[in-house]
Structures are given as C-alpha cells and as structure tokens.
Amino acid sequence: MGHTKNTEIGRKYIIPYALYRVDGYVSANLARKVTGFSEDDLQYLWKAIINMFEYDHSAARGNMAVRELIVFKHDSELGNAPAYKLFDTIHVQKKDGVIAPRNYTDYDITVDESKIPEHVTCTRMI
Figure 1 (cartoon, rainbow, N blue to C red):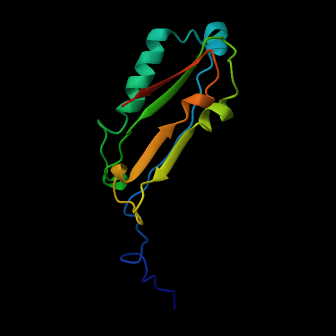
Figure 2: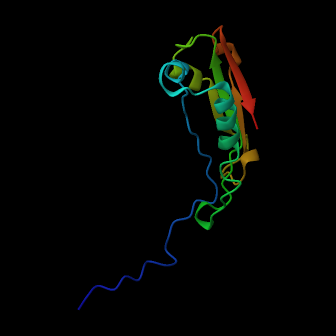
Figure 3: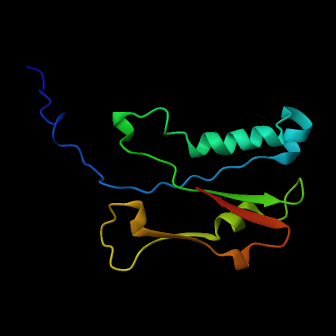
C-alpha cells in the first residue's frame, strides 16, 4: 500500500510580507570593450527593472513590485569604490513600533551618503 500525501494543500507556510533586496552590476569597461552596451541601453535597463512586475502579474508572485532602484555611478570606467562598500551604505530597518511588517511603509530605507566616496554619485529612482 502506497503512502498517501495529505499535506499538499492547506499546510504551506505563508509569509504575509517580505522585502527583497537585489544587488547588481553594469561594467562600463566590458560595455565599451565587448558588448557595445550604450547609455541608451542603460536607460532601458533601468526602466525595465523598475517595471519588471508591472506587465507580467502572476498569482505565484502576488503583488510583487520594484519599490526603488538605487544606482551608484562612478566617474571612472573601472570604478571609484568597491561595490560592497557602496552597497553597505544602504540600510533597511523596520520602523519603530513595527513588530511584523505587512507593508513597504513599515520600513525606513536610507542611504548613508556621507560614506559614498568622491567621484561616485547615488541616484534613487522610484
């Protein structure tokens, strides 16, 4: 006699709200030497990232949305600071009094611009 699965429906764990963070890179040096990736392509990439869940809604993804895109741009093609140091300037913290976040507004997202070195600019896109 085979084992009957009786836990397939109704016993899934549900996370009512989650805030995901993704770090990414665009190499100006590689774009110039190999791919031909242009400034116009970069603008299309930002637009695509910001809107990535707007045109393809799915029940599996619920109400996923890109809430903010934080871009660090270097004056030098090879960079003016290590990426990890720039990513470390971004802080996500639950607001005071929030025990179980249920909304994006339950968080404070800040960038410590005092730690961003000279020749690097930070742009926050929503």
